[in-house]
Image (cartoon, rainbow, N blue to C red; front, side):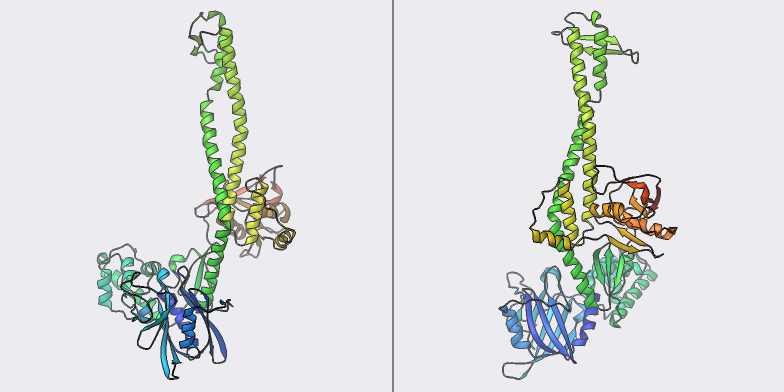
Length: 572
């Protein structure tokens, strides 16, 4: 729920450090993004405002962004009205997803003039707008014409009106609260009735009150309603007091959400705390931008892997169909043998012959081609049998190869979920090319040297007992960890019959505590196809009992003397 009312309130609270500050520089690095340089009490600050539909926000930043050589018109307007001005207030009206920055500046005549720079953080409708003292729009980073919105046009010269608001949760009225929640499901009623509430934070309020969010308000008991109101009130009081605990929640390495107050609903995720909302926002969007960039760079690989997986599944269907068609091949041989044995009993011109099957004593009817002799009919059956027998033998090899390919591709698909940088992508791409699933890329000498200078590294964790644990992010790393890095007495773990990463516990020859073993098993389950399952079987064994068959695909090993532990994956 990036930048809901509560998270935005934490940002506004932090930005009070800018009050009294002088605006020294205004740049527009992107078409929908502003960067204000503010100096206050001997310190320099950079305030980023962005109306990007995918990441609207404002926060302090340390980033140095390159500005266009020719300043956009909006920048020129801002420089005209705000350069040298001092920030007098930064507020969040009525807990809306709007921040208003009031600035004391000078007009063209050199007289004091108050301006307001505001940002509306509303997804694709986000905007950055400059107003004069009377609320007239001087300019906006996005012009909204009457054809786009007849209710709220945002054009130079128009009077600014706020979006149709809801109730402010900072000015609670108990009877009004009870009235609002009585009409709908309580979670729905909260986020539809009060400004700044996202569906997830409305669900959090219900969860803290111990209530099902889908319960209709008119079905609550008096005690339940009172408890819900108290939880709501406490959350708002905590926000008004300026006490925030900024956290980002991670699902494995993926940033899931950011909050200004910890959420019980996210207890199953790994949480990282940040000393300020700005650092939290910078980190979160950096993760998201990196994930998007990685997603774009791996799109062709994901498509390639999916295409080959589908081909393998189609082959499996075809092989199964063929096996079904030739499952009675032994009957052909038996019929040929019976015709050979009872050849003298076959009547000339007959189109069928019934004989006793001397393998099981039953009678069997044998179709005969009347244009052929009994001996020729027998040879016809033997020829058909041998053809199907050869097909069966060939199919066994094809089925095994196809299953190996599918198992391998499934492991690559899992590895794609754990890609964190371009080095990981390069390893997977090279691995697929080596296995014949992708075209080999020709690199110049410089590119090869650059690639060699940055090698992808396995993930590293430390157990609560102090043992080092390593996780391969792809099959190349899996082979390295298991076959080259690990010592014979180190412990190797992998999900049982499930595609996933190899995990190595460095034991240094010591007896391994059960806590560390379970933590490593949890890592193996988390980095597997079964990461969202429960009671996942994980095999573990000393590294000396793990070996790689000749010619096996990357990441494939066999092992014995292993034991199995069952874990339900939890974020670490």
